[in-house]
Image (cartoon, rainbow, N blue to C red; front, side, top):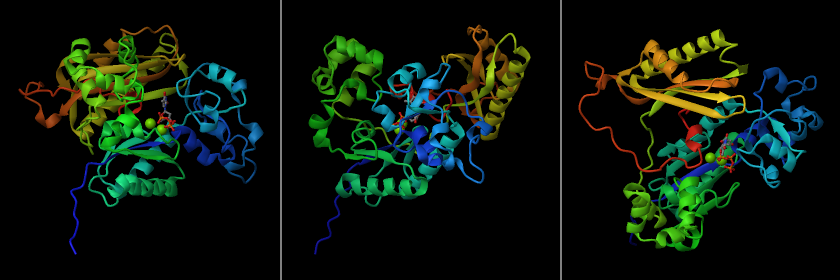
Length: 420
Ligand code: TTP
Ligand code: MG
Ligand code: MG
């Protein structure tokens, strides 16, 4: 009897939670299951959340008719996500609340509770690493997992392991997710969307033409609206269209790095490893105010908050042993628009006063007429404090070039580990 020990083929999974924020809310309000629910609008106040809990009851006992409806919502703002029943009305992430109210006035609206989502985020990721240790964190509700050498990771192309992970996450959290398993991250990321919600898609190299080429170019993580527009002007709509263009033509039209990258992705090639623990690119702290604050009227209050944020970032840097030289700020106005500015200084620092000084200069470069909802401070271009030269600059050595357009493509990176 010959033992068959085939060399494992590379199998990479992308896992994304289903309607994440909304699904977490439904855990505490199970009475909303099956209904159109959107998450967005004003921040939760503790007393507001429990206002109508019947005597001796829990949040699950709050009667349906007391939940706020979209049609009664006054104020601006956008939706972070919507339950699948709400999506049937055409509602989705980043849509204005006013527009959503027109599409589905009877939808229930709940405020965001980031702390709760972060708790569940940690929980589901822990379940995964206990089963498959090589996991790359890609933000609050998604990860890449290397299935190649994990038990069950090769069976049915990874479907067996994907099923186990889905089941384990559900048992631990009550939440569902969708998983794509493919030869690499690029295709896995697309595949996780194929059978949403609560689905699994398994893609092999041979499926490129039939499953990937018919998709619009926008489905490639890294081809954003601008690049897509330009591609469309050249009659390139699908990934298949892209694959049929000459590599040289793409380079001539999109530049050396991006053009070559586009050619590779269209042919389904992507060698990026699943990175378990990345060195932080930046550290940031931000705070959403309980009420909107105005730069002039609430100057002292804002100033104190700003200083405190700088101190916290400095403490984070010092505790973790990092120094940085790019200092930035982020503001969110009352209309939810975001402004960011940053400035790179000539030496690395982790000093609260230095950070405050440069962040203060950044603040002078943003419009401050509108009231503010949020303020954030970030320090980037980090290096380990121990590797610093005596003069506060980096000893000779490269900084390492990034790949072209490998970001989330739809503003997703703004929601990932770093707060900017
Ligand atoms: P997504 O994974 O893009 O969306 P989702 O989990 O809500 O739904 P799906 O089943 O299609 O995956 O984003 C994860 C969370 O990030 C989402 O629940 C809310 C938040 N988010 C925003 O706040 N703004 C946005 O524009 C998007 C897209 C998401
Ligand atoms: Mg999701
Ligand atoms: Mg996601």
